[in-house]
Image (cartoon, rainbow, N blue to C red; front, side, top):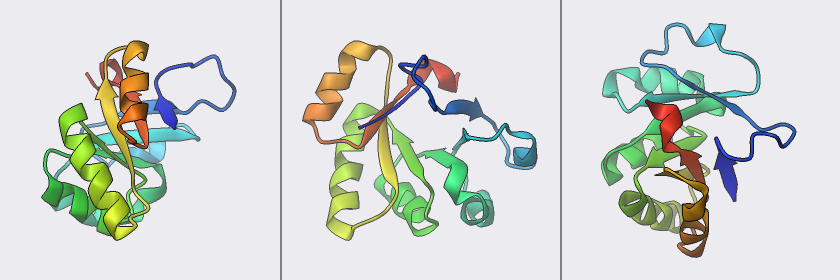
Length: 125
């Protein structure tokens, strides 16, 4: 299970950079995950920076789009993440589904739902 924004004292824990546009992505520190909200006009950028990108998606359709762009992480609320995980498994997408949670106590719930991982929602403000 991927845990982003929790257990930061563990070596090689990725840093999250929340950016509203991808124009300055080259300024992002190495081994960071750049998180952006879904935006159809950024699709070409998703494909270009897929290895370091997490996209906040708000629907199954948006998830399918970012998965086709091979985005590393699709980020959604807990309810939607269950639906996205099922789709990812059915179609064998490489994109990992991360559920946004507010505290470590929710990690077990997400793990029991079979979702790929979690991200600390507080990092996305």
